[in-house]
Length: 311
Image 1: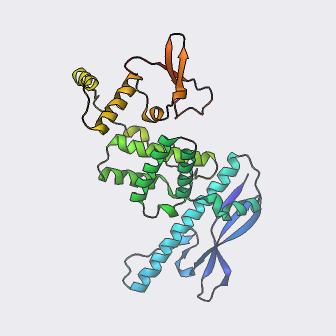
Image 2: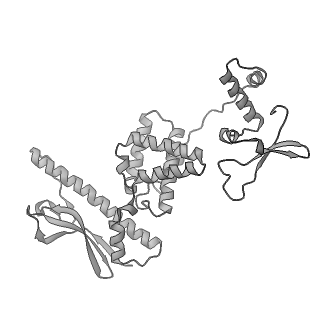
Image 3: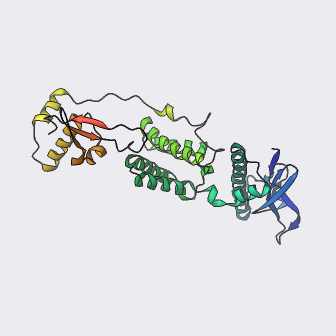
């Protein structure tokens, strides 16, 4: 499907300041459509071949500097429009859609489809929490909070803003905070999962995805850690001693219960009720499904025989 995407300026109609509108020109099968962008260029500061604003150097006057800064901002906006246009065409081609110029225009102008990254992130956290995936929702919330510390304009970011440069900047921010490789990996795995899901749902930015081939490698952040264990003598003391503080004693019993139940997680332990105790031929058992995966198909329940220590 032959097509072209350009951003020329008009030559026929100038505004009262002598500037000409810059438009998106989408062409397919020798047909074209122009889309207004609310951008205007002074011919003296417009690069016809590069289709971008001309940026000057070593300016001294305050007014000239301000105008130059505005042209830089307009170029940045143009760059985002170019990315958005390419993403739309790529999405059509991936889905095998023989798109029309009107379909392209609808997709380009429909800002709800472009989507804000953080709004999607927030919705995903709420969805995970509502469906009982508490651990994942907390992981995503911690990642979102850290991103907000890094980027004060997080609420304004589009998916196309979360590119390789952005991710590398976030990594530098985490390093400056003293985060080790494993901690950084924790955040980037959550960020990658969010972007993957958004791309799968057709609302993300495939063109600027930062974790693909040649992109940011999350696996390289992993660091080996020294194995930690509780010495047998201390474990024996923990089993036989009682704490004078009620809260500490409760915590001791919870730890031992988890230990005797082969390391049952806290959330699974907290959700146990009398209904999970089942009588079988050789005694009573705790029978439960892990909260984390209980809604997945084919998940088998875990059975733990109730020993005297557990009682």
